[in-house]
Image (cartoon, rainbow, N blue to C red; front, side, top):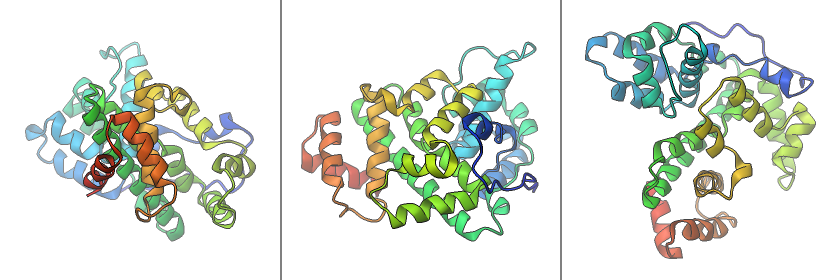
Amino acid sequence: MPSIKAPFITQPLRDVQAWVACFDPATLPVLAESAEAVVALREIEESVDARMLAEVVSADPLLTLRLLAHVAGLRRSRDADIRGDAETVTAALVMLGIGPFFRAFGELPSVEDALAEQPQALAGFRAVLKRSHRAANFAIGFAAHRMDHDAPVIHEAALLHDFAELLLWLRAPSLALAIAERQRGEPDLRSAAVQLELLNVELADLQHALMAAWALPPLLVRISDDRHADSDQVLNVLLAIRVARHSAHGWDNPALPDDVSDIAELLHLGHAPTLKLLRDIDA
């Protein structure tokens, strides 16, 4: 399996543009299990459909990013026969086609290989990944309760909400560790302030710059933007992220009662039914 050849970033870069230039979606590593699943499906390509592939791709935020950015690049090409925005993984696969997918994603580098000599960074990456999966599960659970027809995009937005943090663990593990250590030592310090101090950029700003540079679907970008919390869809994602963060180590975090109250308001439920829904989703 090919490995990442780019050296790790060890010093903060100048600004958001310099950070954006360091990331190419076409070279992003994916989870080893995703790469192995793609290889296995390629061996039975004639029996594979978009739904089967979507189950693999949509479980991996970095493979999801690779696919959406690839399809967006084809859409911008004069020679491409692709029109409109692919807002979900399934839509992107239908637009691209099964054969072209396997040709474009035949050999995928793995996160595990990229961080083989960085066990602390791999642990940090996996912690963010676990939180992202839990947030995505909460988000689609809330969306289903609200009967939101964009539930798949909401799930995707929650899964990708912290992808810049995943990229930081991959490309700048020493800086990611420094941020984590600083936050452990000063838990009341705002994450954005630590990021700006140690990276010269806030990860939220970097993430939106990357989404723009990679021409990701406008609906996905809008739902992922915390600045539009007046939208129920954005609030759906934000509350899913919040409860995933605050319940990461159990359900006794003092911030959780406020989360439950806000989610109850969004879903038009009482406090006890909302708490039961959260536990059911998490189970």
